[in-house]
Amino acid sequence: MNKHDSERVAGMLESMGAVSVDSIEEADIVVFMTCCVREAADTRLYGQVASMKNVPLRSGTPLDKRIVAVGGCIGQRDGQKLLDALPHLDVVFGTHNIGSLPHLLSASVNEGKRDVEVLDASSSFPTDLPSHREHSWAAWLPITIGCNNFCTYCIVPYVRGREKSRALEDIVAEAQRYVDAGVKEITLLGQNVNSYGRDLYGIPRFAEVLDAVDATGIKRLRFATSHPKDLTDEVIAKFGTLRSLMPALHLPVQSGSNAILASMNRRYTKEHYRGLVDKLRRACPDIALSTDVIVGFPGETDKDFEDTYRLVEEIGYHQVFTFIYSKREGTPAAKIDDPTPHEVIQKRFDRLVEAVQDHAWKANQADLSTTVEVLVEGSSKRDSSLLAGKTPKNQTVHASIPSGLSIEDLRGRFVDVKIDQAKTWYLSGEVVDGSIHD
Ligand code: SAH
Ligand code: SF4
Image (cartoon, rainbow, N blue to C red; front, top):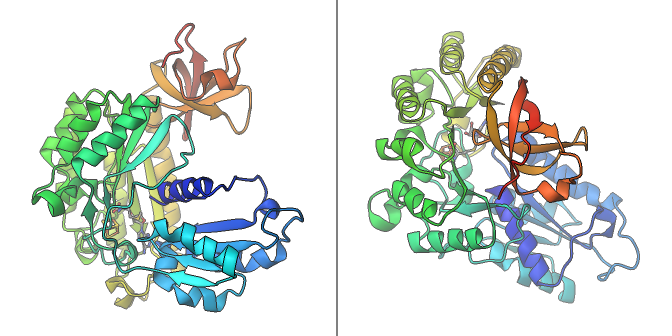
């Protein structure tokens, strides 16, 4: 969601006549887009903005003075506090008024104003703003904003507001525009896409969104994120039937202990979660599952952690994003005392990370000697003679760029790759002759 917001900020800046530059010294407008889900990013932002005073503006840039703005979740939460703490900061905006950035910047450039504009909620779904997509072949498409779930550790509902769905016709129209422009992959976005439509239509209509976006002719369709309590049989069945829906699902479990899940207000049990996984694998035997796990939630005992460890082992995820619990002021969990020493939590975390790597390696072995369709994203960061791209299951693939071709001939197109090596975090192989296609 943050990346998508940033693409919209870039789009608005471009439509004001700004151009992007390669180094911060050349940038007379700098916009920080922020996240406060965990403390580390939060602290870093204050340091990063403060350090801007040490980065001189190269002479000859159009404005002669650098304008620094902070937007997104920290802007929303801290507002004026940011301006008070950071003398080099000019503009603060929040999550509900990205569209205000042009007038705030203009006031700062023309009148030297330092200004904060943060709204409590948005009156409309703010997606008709220009956007500069990072990749021409892929698009994020928000279908809901905000969240009503109030998981007890999470700050998102406080900084992004209540869940608001976007009209189905608008979603389909935007998807169709992308398909007509040659976009190959759309990722539908929402804090919990499964509850899409409840506020607008009284019932969730996410399965209909999937059908309607598939009908635009998009090649690859994905979505994030899915709350297990709201994942319906109807949506699960789509993994077996819908042409464009890729066989990969991010289904955050957070914990494998029913006591901790209850204390997190997740409103499902590990048995329910396991049941969902069984159904998903019945609908789509090859589906690649990924998840999020929080280690060290207040009150987590060794036994609770063992339950999580065992669940992760049982399910055998392709990828697990592991987080050490981070206390967020204002959330209910911040009030729960926990005497567990940090070293104990760190040990649990390290054990889990090791298991996660083993499972990721094992899961990738299933693709050895198969031929997979890869959407090429660019060249490999480590070796520019290799292309890098993604499989339907969202695994990274490396393969030699076929002779006589450059990466520009392949970027945003599909190739088939015969896999001959399966590592923990990537697969590699050879491009099948004559397999380049759109
Ligand atoms: N709406 C999505 C994403 C929420 S934030 C969802 O429900 O899945 C992404 C992840 O950050 C969460 O899944 C959770 O694992 C993690 N997270 C959120 N708050 C956290 C906190 N206070 N400490 C540690 N991890 C947290
Ligand atoms: Fe946070 Fe829970 Fe909402 Fe996800 S569903 S954004 S974890 S409150």
